[in-house]
Image 1 (tube, rainbow, N blue to C red):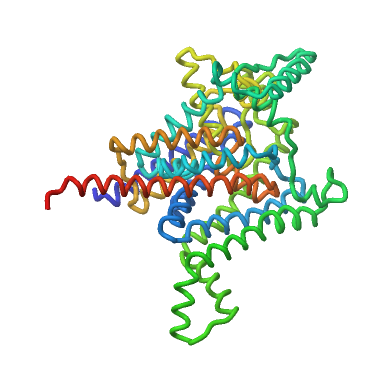
Image 2 (spheres, rainbow, N blue to C red):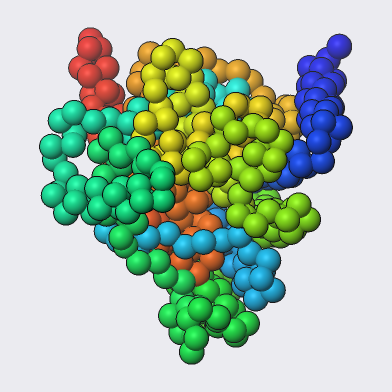
Length: 483
């Protein structure tokens, strides 16, 4: 059997396995359709990410190291389309989006994440789809960084607690005492617990729609479209594309036109921006489809919540109905973002593994109070990540782009260290390049741009570091040559 036919067979086998898993869940209980929805949206994301080569790390590396704007432009296109769909969903009360606490922690976390994604050679979403292509370095980043490293990071105590501001400690203990009056015990033990309860939860949350609305509690349809979509998403995206055009492809494009025409005008500048956008139809089209799919994902989950009367808007309620009370927190919740999201579910996998070796991971706020540690096969968000991997694998097999590549010694270091930094940069901000930037910036939350700015700063530092490292290694090799 030829390689092409063998790849096609394996692609159909994987697709068949996902269908079989879906049928098993459906036959077990109708509530599992909620989880099945995450599986198939994950698979759709994986296919589109792989086909369009969508990766925030690649976008930064291509732009800063090679001056190629293709990927960065594709991401901005996806953001614009998703923002319009988010506005429609919010206006019709079918949105699962919620803004995050605003603060400087977003910029700092984004910078750490930005460095990590460049070192690992892929952002959170990029690492998952590259695992589906057989990339061993990305696999190391996911297992040791996003899974195990992230879980350990939120459970650290000891000397880390001594560095905390007293106000965080006082605020957290005050919240613990207040909740205790309701008969619940908040597990505040690690440094992250004090940070989360004592600082992050004290910060305000915003969307532009609520800021410009006459009644912040009930923004109008115009508020959602003008505030969240136009002001917070479309205008910044257009400005960024214009800046990218000005600093990167414009010079060569205009010089070429001057040689051909002798002079240029504003129409030529607009044409240059449009040519930059359409330079890679594959990436641009995938940008549109990613934005639309992300919107359909929100609509589907909101529909499931209405269909099954999930008052809490959380899958944990359905787990409790089915008797799986050990999977959820004391509040009967489990991590259920309601939209495209990565990193928290990988952290749950790390916590699940560590608990099997006797490490109590329920004694912290992140797992014990907010997200829970469900069994892997009952974790909806984890199935979304698995779907991304298998969706990317299907697409890679069909396009003869799948090949398992075990990392060399140096790539082990880059993968693990980059993964650890991504995990560390995603937890304080409660999101990564998807949940921290893409979803928030398109949903009207200005936090998304704060985190995105941090990512750009971190990515720039990471690219500069890699350039320095490469030149240093080449200098060593050249010094060893005998001319």
